[in-house]
Amino acid sequence: MKLKLLSGIGLIVFLGCSKEDVKVAQQKGFVKISAQVDARVRLKAALAVDNYDVSITSKADAKFSYGKKVSAIGANPVELEVGEYTIKVNSPSVALPGFSVPLYGASQDFAITAGTTKNLSLVCKQTNAGIKVGYSDAFKKYCTDKSLSYSTSIEQAGSSLTYATSETRVGYFNSGTVNVTVNVGDKSSSSALTLAAQDLVNLSIDMTSEDPSKVVLTITGVDDVNTRDEKITISLKPNASTETLKLSEDFASITTGDNISSSGSAAVWAGDDIFISATKAYKAGGAIKLGIDGTEGSIVSKTLDLSANSGNVTVKVKVKGWEKVESSLLIMVDKIEKEVPYNAIMSGEFEEVTASFPKAGTSSSKITIKSSKKRLFIDDVKVYN
Image (cartoon, rainbow, N blue to C red; front, side, top):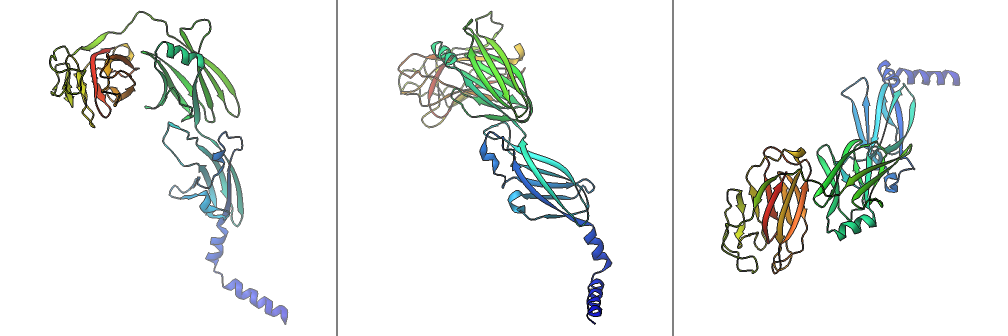
């Protein structure tokens, strides 16, 4: 009797499930996901993966997509239709290049079979590459003794990072080619460098002992699989200039006002046939004042052909501040801007500063000279190409 009752219950259960339900159950399976960052990474903060993005795409159904954070999935299996899929786990995306932004990710193909659970363990590795720039004590002393400003900029796909003198952070770039430009005084030199994912390139800039007029860049690349050393030598010896003077403005036509008192530069200067646009510019006795208290000023040149010499442009300006240096000097070639430091003030002589713009010039460029926020004086502007 018991056997018959159990058989009856089994029959009731079976009849309670439609053929369609059984078919659906047979067409689905599960995937259980765990993710971690390769323990060999240099920045241990990257080991936390809870905020990483998980995406699953179907190889058969282009419309299917699944996306959640690792923390939202947790230990719960994900139910999927039977088929073939690709899973990607990535750290949150950021714009590159940028400082201190290593990116990590992993990708894996997998298949779901009916009524089973697929266990996946993904190890995320670094997907971009880092560059750190350092200057030796000898190099810094040489530049200080010669009053040479210096910096390094690294460009990729139209965007760049500038490593100032004191910059110690690692800059991160996509894998591929970057252009490294070292600026020393009014000279610059560029070189291409190829990066691979997981690279950490230590770029050391130093002087050669046998020739103190050269700069040596030692590039050491370190990742999980290889180490490489490269050297780029930049000569700082004076050579015959190939640059041509394209603009010269000494403001000699300005005969009123002065640049040695706080009340001698109140008359507006509207520009001339060289600097055709002027905003908050004032006559200052053979010079001009840019800006007033609390407001920046600027002048913009006529259109210049600066396409020669690979578009390399050098701008020289004499500058001094107000009663103290209260505003930075900004020099632009078209949309490329550089901030140029100076120390001279109103009571003293003008100080000549130089800004170099590698490959910035075009056949229709304009030069803009600005005060960043308040007042300063400028004189003797020269543009070379």
